[in-house]
Length: 240
Image 1 (cartoon, one colour):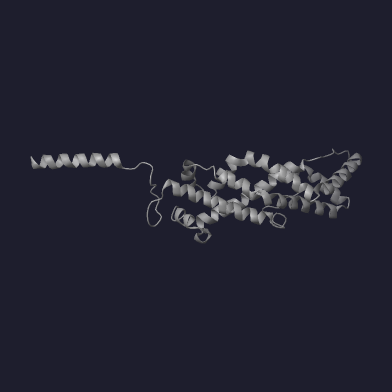
Image 2 (tube, one colour):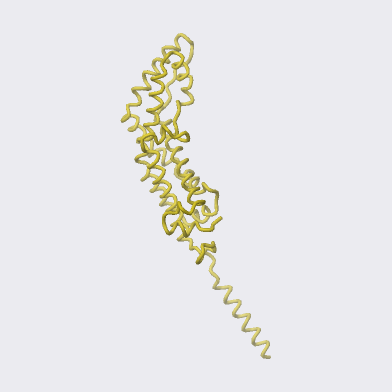
């Protein structure tokens, strides 16, 4: 009889335990002291992207941020490469070099205003997004940001690129080059070109920023010294 009573009590206790086990909080990711909550994961991922965006825009917007960085350097537009080759052969190397430099100066100028755009997008990250990103690839957060904000960044960034092109007087370099090339095509039988510099510089500037942000994210994931806040140290400790 006593055995039956004890067994019944144990059965009730197990049933109750099963009912009260939490299903979403906290997340059992080891961090050295206690499991992370989903709120901490979300805060940590947002913090990581904000740190990465701040550092990246700071690097990209400084003088030579694009021009002397091989990963970000903006070359002649691919569709205008024939313009470059023809003009170099015709003795316009100096003008070609000046034009290429101003392409990069335009991107550097434009990225000065990019940080608020990234921060606004980062704040929209949800809890479910953050949980998936934490265990993702080294650039999972960066790719999430690119995937969910590219269209918005394009529409918001293009006017900045347009203003930057105007500020550095880019068209004053491009138009003489294009006109000279188009005059030469009369003799060569080639086709005149007129690439859209706003679209080109805009996309290259955005791509360059994402390259830098991905590097920042990878560093935060792999290098404890890059975790500059308490929440970053906690969220990214022992997650791999």
